[in-house]
Image (cartoon, rainbow, N blue to C red; front, side, top):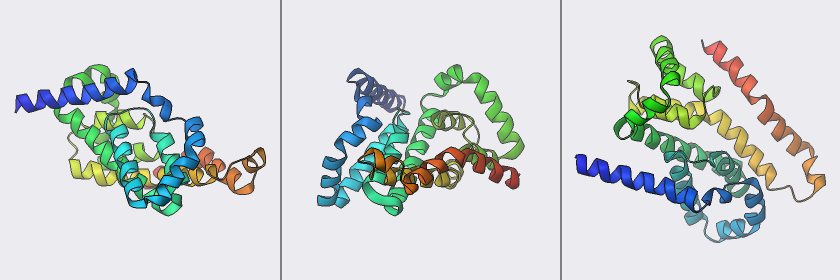
Length: 222
């Protein structure tokens, strides 16, 4: 068992090292998305199922390894797959990736995570002891901590994996919908006039007020 654990740790760390060593994060920017949007869209229309599978695979890898780029990937989901399918793909891919990061923290990197995020872990432990799964739901709706930090720290708590999964998927759904919707409008921006169109302005206004709406919702839940 220790042999497999060590091998898995090496593989995961190697993946993260390769990502940064080859500067692969340059592919997860808005500028790159806009530059390659037409080519990616052509591939998506020619191979819809395979494109969806590859998109989910990349999204799971990014979130599972806690790499930067999830926000741009979410916008890309809207730009490439539309509001409905983009939301479905992002919802499941982000939750699966978050759960993998959660499990990696719990079984592979417990000591390292505790060492790096000890102070934040104390806050998480107090919140979980007070509110249980509702605290996780609150963190998903109103991200006091970055999502990747929530994934890692929750792995050190006593919450069950299936509870973490369904609460995360439910809690991230509203934010996913807002970002994917913004991505659908991003796909339509091909000029300065497109930036000030009512639909685009509304979509990005939703991005701005979503944290406030989420706070109101969590207050009502409590």
